[in-house]
Length: 112
Image 1 (tube, rainbow, N blue to C red):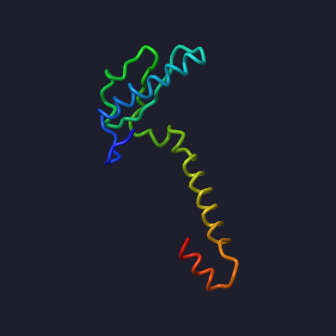
Image 2: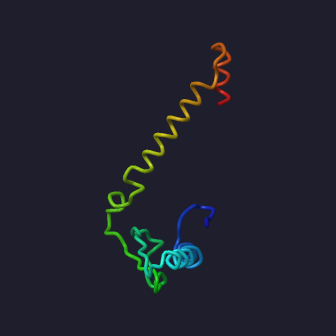
Image 3: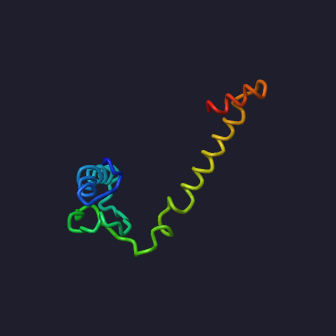
């Protein structure tokens, strides 16, 4: 799901929760023979309406204010590690792209 501004709002979040997230969680719970799931959320303004998030299968818990960066796994090094690997591969490709003379290498770098 998306919108032009790339910002999450409450109607988009509610639509995602009910039309995408909830059916997938329900299917996964059934497959794994589990009864409940927990959705951890930060305090983003788009997610304020807890009443719309009620479900017999999903419990929604909000993280305390100002703890998102500390508690979210993606902010704990996963993104940083991915960015470092991407940069390394990008630079390797750039450096080893041309292997003729220097003038052709310069053209190759500009094209790259």
